[in-house]
Image (cartoon, rainbow, N blue to C red; front, side, top):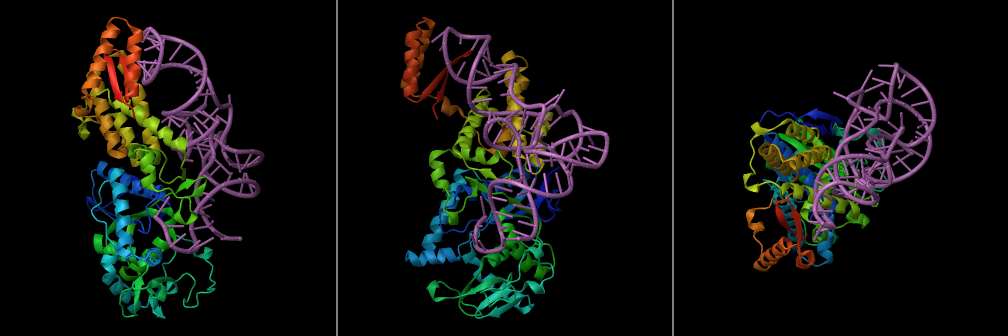
Length: 456
RNA sequence: GGCGUCGUACCCAAGUGGUUUAAGGGAUCGGUUUGCAAAACCGCUAUUCGUCGGUUCGAAUCCGACCGACGCCUCCA
């Protein structure tokens, strides 16, 4: 039984659908710059969610939107004297590339805002017709006073009512649906009944999600900072028209901090995922992100990344003990240990707890292995667990037999080292070990003879 | 200012009323094993969960106050 924390109710709820196909919409990147590791905390969380649904035998259909209409993109395009597309396509590619490298399952849809502007205009017109929106100087605003359900994610009392400088708006928290063209926007605009302009962010997501996934979305997710006002405003637009829940479950992931501060491009403390991947493998980054719960803040630190690396080493060494061509499991073979791992994941995606259970299993199994009894059973149970674990975490590269073929030179060194060992010539044996190390190989002596590992 | 989240060992991090006199990982030190290493294993490291009160037969877990960190209320994953 899968439970997830629904931000609408602020409670863990049992996940229910009337269809086996779960539709998920995740707010994606604004493509004006390279995505950073904090952005990817959220995208890895989406991936975790989808993998967990698959573990529970659901099929999924998911979309992550590409926000390619935005003030920052426009100002950058003007400043750099480039076409808007030259910028957006570059950073969209950067996002997709990093997603692939981080082994994020491919979503069915990556819709761009620019491909749906006509629908947005039609949608805004509907809101205007129904009196939920008003037009001032070519801008269109949503009128929150005309929509009684405003305040799903926020306590309205906390919002103050001063209109301050923005005299166009009736209420301070009215939000813009359509932004009128200004001279700074250059030649970037779309024609509409209200004049030249462009759709605003909240409308982009609202329209795209409905267009791509239909009006029955099971899960809508995003980073915690989008809860208010972005998701509030999406709900207001859609639900004022449909009178139905826009999405049944809203999931929000916490931030990644750096030195106790939120990582963000505007704070200037961001670290691009591209640069991170130069220093740390995708496995390490995944492990780092998944070893805390998605609703807790985490801090980026070198020591934590090093720790993640060591965790992966421990798991990889464990995995190497088993014959890998049998990596296939059926649910019928699950033992209590496997089940408690699944239970942890199904308890609101509790990856740290699940990780603890898996490590406990590794430790127990290593103990059992030293006794060299029940090897067949241990082998099977371990292979199943490794596969189960990896179906969620995806941090172990299972070695296939090709990796066990070593270069000729290395094989010769191994052979002569074995001869030296047979002759109890420890000095020569150690010399060859050092030589192998310098060539990038670690040799270890076990009961079953020499074992060679590639230095990482 | 308003609203909210969090504070668990040297570090990271689960647990959110009794089966926990607090999982798991990292680190340190000692030991087993090994020709020596490495890996693996064993042992040590929180009678205590920010502080102080309260509720309860019983609290890290509920309530209150205080202290500290962070987030949202403006663009943001």
